[in-house]
Length: 250
Image (cartoon, rainbow, N blue to C red; front, side, top):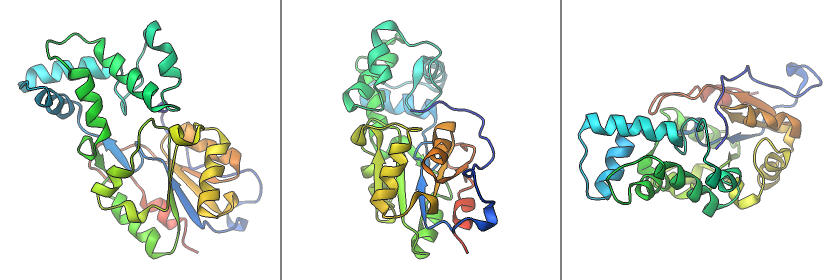
């Protein structure tokens, strides 16, 4: 998943000023940090341990969660150091499902624990909707765009399918296309992944808005889109997605 960084101001392509640009007719959203956030680290560890048949008190779970997040959690801060034996799969993590799993299970396995199978159980939490929390304004914003007839794509650097997450949240019908890096072989900020999304929606890039929380998302500007970069909020909070809806209004 992409590097985290303090977001810049909303980005627009070089050229005419904002008032003379054509209206936004489609919106592309990043997934992690934009529409949803991973669950609280302690809850993540407790749930994974239970799946392995172990019960952890909050104190032990907190210490273990801190160590696992430092080692490198999918959806969390990037690790300060990637072990040499994981370097190759780490580099390919958003291009291949097997590399994504190997990278993050491998990082979790560097943290010593007496819970057998914990590293795999931690990764399994990521693959299901219970391991994620949609932002408070995600459903409202997607519904507003659908009501306005504005097509939506989710564009994510990721190594697994997130469609089941949206289905479980009751949001799948509000997304017209999923453009996932491991399926299309392109990773943000490569302009090709944004152009693929625009093509799937049938909208010109110059009429499209990319909403995300990292510089990789702002890379959409190189493909001709407008980019809105917003800070990633804590799980369960609103994430300022109403700004994207407002930009589609004429």
